[in-house]
Length: 125
Image 1 (cartoon, rainbow, N blue to C red):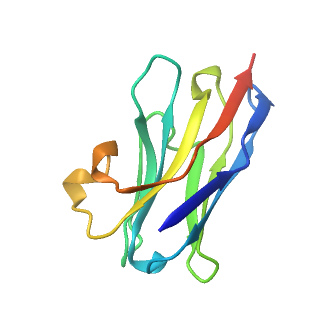
Image 2: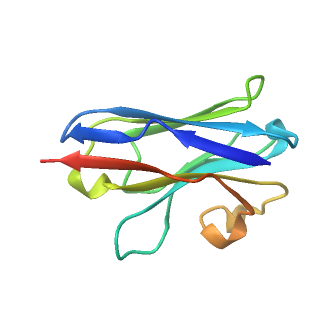
């Protein structure tokens, strides 16, 4: 599976941004897909994911209520709608995918095999 993330940029505090991730190859609809982010000097952290088959959605506590993850299986696309952005949301955002991912592994970056190249989101105050 190849992943290509896009949509990053500079946005003001309180603004919004929509990230997209185009997938090719693999059986996209059955994969667990998600977003992680990495700020300078910090580890890559979980943002949100959609588990394959049943499309159960999970969010990090820090983004719940502000971010919305969604997927379009027909177009093999993954999205992250980010609202009410804060300076601490500044990071490189990565889309990721994996098949047969256990529930206990969903929030762990090392559990995912396929990664996009990342897209920078900068929230200015």
